[in-house]
Length: 225
Image (cartoon, rainbow, N blue to C red; front, side):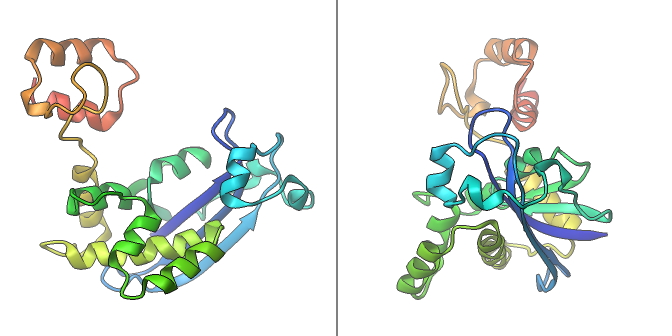
């Protein structure tokens, strides 16, 4: 069994979204997050990189000409847990392998609901003792490899802030799963309304008609119907 903190860079927002860079840290005990192994590789997609994505990660098409194709990326065989900030995005990019996902974004929202932003850079600033150092690190880092190291830093802070620190990766996964269940309606005519206060007829309608509903929203609605 192994645990990877994963991040990807992609061609952009338009389908098909293709991998152009992947990085992971294999980490050990949940108590220490010791790094056991590292991986970083760029890949060549079969479509051009969108300029919007290029403006974020600064990877150019011509830099990928000699890289392996996007569809050759594989996780190690023994991976059981995948950790990431908004981990479902990266999980989807690599083909949705059968692993348990731990979302540091969901955990951050649960632990610090009043933070003005839960993005990875914002959280680094929020907890920094030296913000100039954080600024310099963020300005010079535009890669999946940097992002997995930042994610590990955020996860370390999250673990230290939990009322009861998880003693295993399974326990952390269970905390993440609970954190991902929304407490307010994220869209529609009842946007922002606490799910516990939604009209019962609307809950029944949503469960019966929104077939593409997020699985965690479905869990929330099923809990109040």
